[in-house]
Image (cartoon, rainbow, N blue to C red; front, side, top):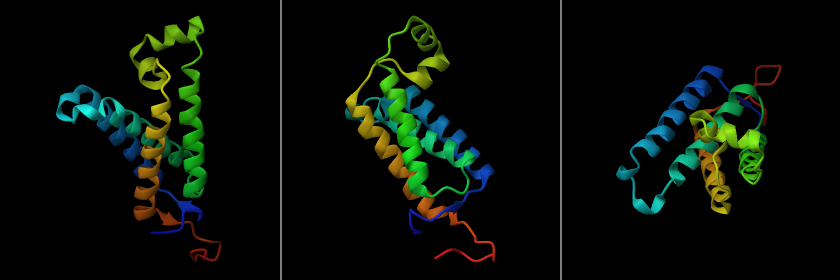
Length: 143
């Protein structure tokens, strides 16, 4: 497993595929919730949502380190969670749409912050196993 501080060389197509697969798994976790242990509730979908954010940022910031990507994904996920405390009418109307509810949710939960960190941690593990470190100008892996 490569260092989490090393810059990565992410292949955009693989990260886009990971985003799509994670979205599918997240939707399935909500649709087939009865197949999962009842004690997990909606948390698998929330962890997968933050994992999707991690992979999505990986498509945009292909040479960032895993730590940088994780901090960005945590900031984004925590920001969306904090936005649930905002009760502006325009935001409430967005949340009443299917896509708006999937992106913004509706009720703030401290537990979600922990679940988001778990999902992003899973992304770091996956990336550590599969994403190659970025190459330097001479074609060598940085040490």
